[in-house]
Structures are given as structure tokens and as C-alpha cells.
Image (cartoon, rainbow, N blue to C red; front, side, top):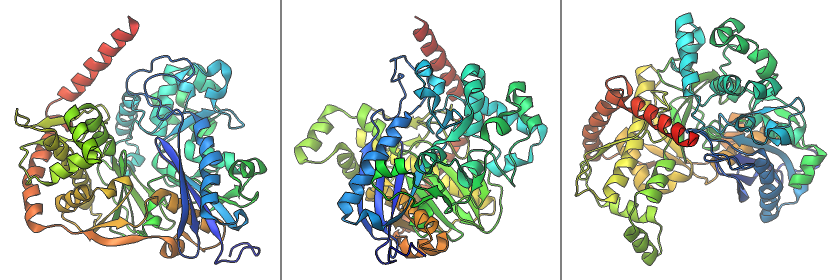
Length: 563
């Protein structure tokens, strides 16, 4: 039940989605999920990938950091702006919930102060939060996997046989070995998803989602001291010294909004603050996709593939399977692709001639829209290309962020729209590879549900339906993660008894918006067969050239930095 002072039909919640480059807030009515208003606030520092904000010092290759003050600005700016735009009385807001990119993780003091905010540490890269796409810990992840295999660690299978360089342990091991002073000063190695909740309610609660998927917590336990010591003797106490903390279930109340956070947001002090969550995993309730076989692809800069199931399976290359990782009482699965929208954005920014930009401007459309139009006019296979979507490495099913992209078949007749379509198709082939891995492991995928900004591209959506040969449903919201957070806030506030009930009332989806065409699906089967040949040749040891090129690049950049 809602607070006695707020009638159910008037009660609203606020969901805040912290993405890679910005945060967005949405105000949602708990009775029916109506989105009354939203607001977006870009991070001032964005994704810090080239130089430290404090000093301008160059960052090494594959680094990606963020600045915690940018996240607080979202609370101070986007939340009150959304509430004002909604026209609701702030006293009718009964709860707030947040979601975050993961694994975005930071070192803090006992009181939660980020180490990068200490003046004497502002020039130390390891004092900053490491964004999810920080891939400089790949060597540490490789050792984590090798030692786990040698020791026969049973938890490894729950992560598809590979722990990612994006996750908590690899990044922490990198911290220990590259800046032991910062590691020693770290009291909490904390997910940004939990840190922001701490700032809202004054209580540090570790959420079940990130603890399970990114923190290697299975069956109530983390990896043992003995295993950690085998990685590095100084790492043996990592769990109990810096990681372990009480776990909060998804949709539970972490605490009440503090007076300070109430002043930031303009919301009533004491309202429910929900336990934190991950942007991908909070989205299935927003799409009312909580039944087995419904795989939700949250497509933005990257893509996360998540789904619930009533059975436990071991899927090679998945990011993890966690009991209660998406909704209580069911197994939650995760897989993903490290680059999707980022790939399309990179191509438009760096590979498209000025004439295309001029043509788009003359017609009053963007370059993406122009290339999509030109790509849509092509027959399947007309471009003669096949690409590997590894511009940001491979998250699933190879779990290797030192891989890089490949485009095969280019000639002097190849135009930008040809390559653009090949890249669209490559990301769809990557998703099909993930689906096939799930089904081969006995975890069926009957429906693909898409959320995220890329669902606006109708050509891309139809390509996915044809390549995967499945009906493709779309979430009926432009703010899927933020809506999902608002749903969890409604549960934390007592407006709905549990997440499935809240999802049924507040979630939005358009079923089978795109259906596969048999002829197009058959044509794509031929291209996908070539993709899989390249995928296995370059990704499974057939040819290690991509790793060698990565090593050459890193060495060259290191020499350049020394000079």
C-alpha cells in the first residue's frame, strides 16, 4: 500500500537511469505506468578515455573512467526538472529508484568518499571510477580464468567459463598490482549502482544483481581466500576487506531519502529508496518480459541480453546466471555485446566522407538516417561484405576484449552505405550467436524483445528479426531502464506487492512488432555462415593475429608516451 497521505491513483515514483554519457529521470504513475515527464542531463566529463580531468595527463590504452560528481548533478538537475515538467505535486512522489551501467566500480573511504575526490589523489587514474568499458584489465581477467580452471573452481561455469575484464575482480586485481597504495587506501570497492543509493538514503546496501553478475557471488558465497591468494597473496583478503556487505533483494527498500538528497532532488524526505540495480536487468519488468524464453536486448552504445528462466543451465560465454538476478524466484541470465551503437557512431564520425554529411544537411536529416535509407535500398548480400562486430572487443560468447573488428570483402566499388549495412548486420549476427549458445545449452529463446535507443531504427530492427528468425517485440517506452527503476520504486514503496505484479500494471510492450520474412531469413543464413567462419577463425584460436595486433598497438603507444 502507498502512504495513507497519497491516494493510489495519484501516487507516482521517479526512476533514474545512469547511462554511459548521461543520466535521465522519468516520473511514472504507479497505477498504470503512465510516463508523465522525463529529463536528461549529460555528464560534464562524459566517459573519460583520453586524459585525466584534474591534470590532463594521458590515459593508457583501453582505459575508461568517470567522475562521481557528474552523477550527483543528475540528481540535482534531471530529477527536479522531470518532476516540474510532470506537473505533479512533489508530495505525491512515494519512492525513487536508480539503475546504473555495470560494471562501473569505484574505490571509496569508509564514509563513501570516492578516492578521486581527495586532493592528493586527483592525479591518480586508479582513484577514479572505472567505467564498464574499461578494458585494460584483460590480462588480469585472463589470469583469473586460468587459475580458476586449474583449481577446478565450480563457480566458473555459472559465468560461461570466462570472467570478464569489465567486472569487479579483474579491475580490483589491476588496481592492486598497478597502484597498491590506492588499493590499500580503499575501504570499499563499490559498484556505482550501490554508491548512488548510498548517497540517496545514507545506507550502503549491496544489490543482488551486481553482486551476482559482476561480483562472482553464487549460492551465497564469493571466491575463497585460497583462490584469491593463488592470484596474488596480497589479494587474499579482498572479499572480506573491501567487497563483502549485506545484500539487498531487487525491489526492496534500501532506506528513506535523506534530508540532503531531498534538497538535491526536491522530493519529500523519507520516501522509499529502492535497492540499486543494473540498467539492463531493470528493463525486463519495464517491457513486461518476465516469462521464460523472453530475451530482452537493451540496445544502446552496447547491448545487454537478459532473460529469466525457471531452469539452471550452463551457457558457454554467457556473462552469468544468478538466482534472483532479475526477479526473485527465477534464474536470471545475462549475455551481451560490448559495442553496438558505439560502432555505428564511430563509423559515421570517422569513416563517412563530407559529401554525405552535406547531402544529409541539405535534406534536413542526419547522416545515420541518410545511411540507413541508402542501406535499406540494398538487397541482402549486395554489398559483398561480412564484418565482425568486435570494435570494442567481444563480451559474449568469446569474452575477450583484446579482439578487434574485421571487415571482409571490400573493393573499390564499396561505398559507405555498404559498410554501414554490413556493420548493422554484424551486430545482428552477434546476437544470433548468443541466442544459439543459449539454445545449445538447453535454455530456449522464443521471443526477442528490444529496448533502448536503437529500436528507433526500423531497418535495424527488421534485420534483427530476419537474422535471428524470430518475432521481435519492442518496449513501448523510450526510457526503458528508467521506467524499470520506477517500477522497482513502486514495489519498494509498497504500492505493488512484488516486481511481477508491478510490471503487469506498469510495463509496456508491443508484441511481434517485426516478424521475420522467410526469404530474407534464408538469405541471411548464408551470410551468417560466413560470419561464424570468421568468428571462430579469429576468435577461437584459428589465427591469433588480432591479439598480436593489439600487443603491437599497446607497445607502440607506450613508446610514444615515453617520448
